[in-house]
Length: 227
Image 1 (cartoon, rainbow, N blue to C red):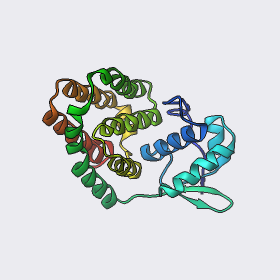
Image 2 (spheres, rainbow, N blue to C red):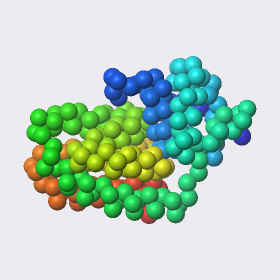
Image 3 (cartoon, rainbow, N blue to C red):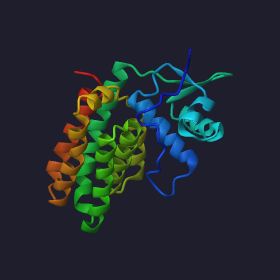
Image 4 (cartoon, rainbow, N blue to C red):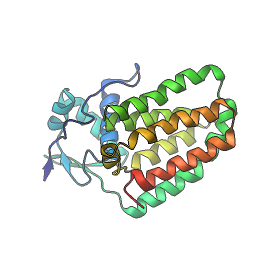
């Protein structure tokens, strides 16, 4: 059955970076929609339907979806559109375990390398997550969260590691985000990003590592609808 593009929450296509092309923006929004579950696992979506949602032509949507095929997030269905890939519970457990091995120690390594002059820009990225939560924009939340964490990890100076984490994050599903938003608890989770930056600003690398570990735990627990 071909799914219609969901409307309402997260339907805007606001750029997070001035250098992003339309194709990049559409791809990032579609990826976030898949991760949050707004684009349902197993459902098939056509490029025209998704283009209507984002108020763009089907062409950049089709191009973006082909990029997501390479990432394994969707598969092409001839004459129908693209089917969102389903991820098993075991897959989610494995993804969370790998992220816990990689990200917390990398954040610890990054903390002493972050120049104090960069903190205001990092605060802006953290605030973008809070703002998206406050307006109920799940797609904006996921994308802002992705930009924040990959930027933070980038200070460790290992580009390949950041690429691996980006791929792991793309494969994650946060199907618990909608009930989290509806319960009013998403804002508290968003605020953790400022708390993490408080530790960074204080030069507390072990504390930042511990908070990152706890934060990722939410991905597999509360955020993903797991235990």
